[in-house]
Image (cartoon, rainbow, N blue to C red; front, top):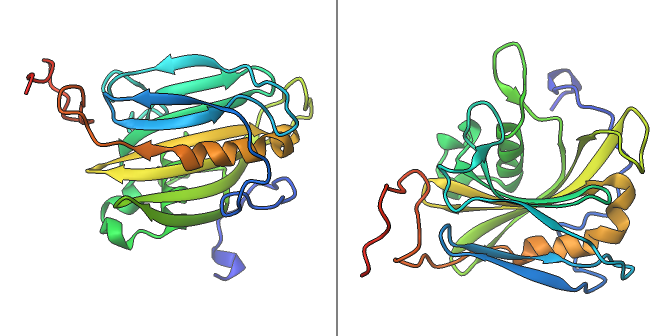
Length: 238
């Protein structure tokens, strides 16, 4: 596109090697998470690539979409699982929501990986331009799609503006993140791992393994609650 038609972007940190499409150089220990009510699972790293322990705390677990807190005022994307490590801080989230507006009118089989990444990031943003359209301050570095057991997974890497922290006291800081988005029915499930740029190198490999472990699992008829159609009563025992 001509430069005149591009939306101004924030000045972001220097680019590092893209991990969203690379094999992990270091295997880190991990811990599993399995949520049968919403039918997903993943593993998160328990140490950095240099062997230091990551002390995660589970800050949020929601069994259903309707009981989860929204990420923005329109309450579309909601956080159903969240981990935080205060050294950094490092964060890990699983969010669920309907297809963002820029994708909703397009057949899912025609979605491009970068469109999915940018749509999800814009949908969780709180910034808006004069027309009322949401805008994301994140810059997608890379995106690719893979089909696993009949489900499409979009893997992406992005950089966003952060807040000053104990390690980075400058007014302008940056966060580096890896995400994966998968679709089930009318809803997108997104797993994201994020750290300040200064902590990225020692966490990138573990984060890569984590998003690669994310799977939508076969729904259990007795436990599964479909987002947006959860009902008030538990499932029947058959």
